[in-house]
Length: 97
Image (cartoon, rainbow, N blue to C red; front, top):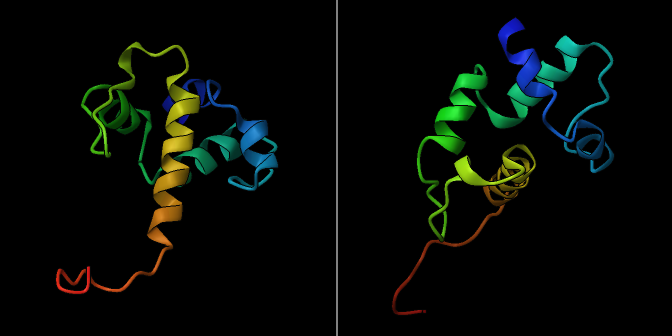
């Protein structure tokens, strides 16, 4: 986790707390752990692999490698993933569709 602390500083932590995405954090370690839990990853290398080193599997293809704010964009993408996981929809029925 100590290796992930510099990575965590790139995120808009205060904004994410204001939106209710993350709990208030005091120490650097607490903030880093909150971000790791938010993304569901074990370390910053996993974030790099998922958000920068491959094309994301979303409705459109994107890689955050060449964007100016990959950390903020990845936070919004993850928030969308978390919200989508909370949706409950009936199974797809082609005839009903």
